[in-house]
Length: 141
Image (cartoon, rainbow, N blue to C red; front, side, top):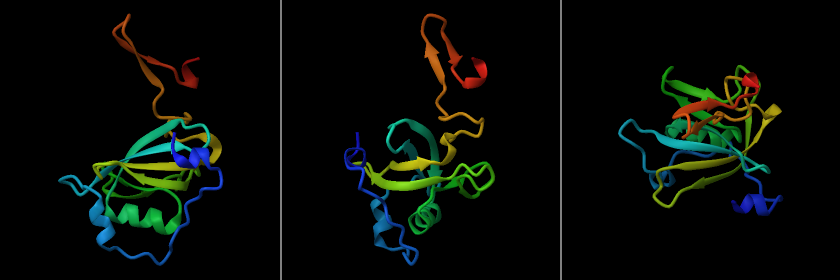
């Protein structure tokens, strides 16, 4: 549980004029200049998705107040929800102790984070008795 979950008045404030600076060096970027990002839903604490950010994506997120990721498949910035409308309003941003993972606490518009239409991207659960992944999506029910 994060502090924002305990304090509903805690909100992130975008800084439109924010410039790149030494604060970016607190993040441990991988060889491709990326850092993994976990999106967690404000209120429910559900883990919605994992994505990547580069420096420009983090800067855009901090300026805009909505999640902007780096899509490795398309090699470009991706404003989450730009096509679907399922944007993620940032409530809080955290950096882990090693500086190599970012946690975004977000308000998920329409409750849909996954491109499949699911609430969360993590709807496949390992079943040891069957040695298989079980699809727990709303489409399989």
